[in-house]
Image (cartoon, rainbow, N blue to C red; front, side):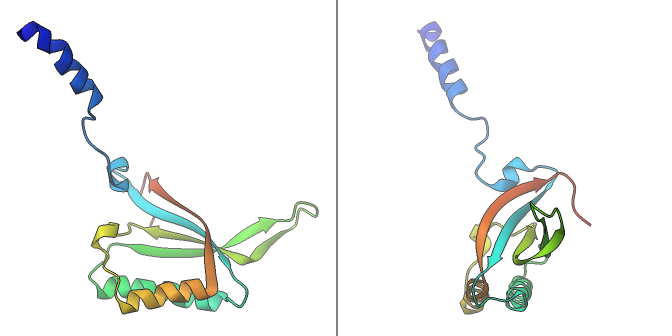
Length: 138
C-alpha cells in the first residue's frame, strides 16, 4: 500500500507550486518595483494640470503614512520619421511610480478620488506596466 501511494504523492508534489507568487514583489526579490506609465494629454488637458495631479497624488500618499514610494515624470522625446529631427512630444508624458504600496493597503477616500479626477481631466493612460528595477534608482 505504501508503494502504491508514492507515485500519487510525487505527482501531487510536482503539480503544486512550491510558492504561490501573487504580488509583483514576489517576482522582484532584491530589486525595486515600479509602475511605468505612458500617458497622453487629452483635448483640453494640460501638462500643468497633469503635474498638479501628480503633486496631489504624492501628498495623498504622504498624508496616509506611505513614505517609501516616489513619483517621477518626464517628457517624451520623439524623432520625426521623415525629418529625423527630435522634439519633445506636446502630448505624451512618461511616469514611474517607484516602490508603490501594495494595492490592498490603499484605501481611496475623497482626496484620493480628487487626484484621480485631476488625472482623468487632463490625460489618459496609453500604456501601463509593472517592472522590477534590478537596482534602486537614486
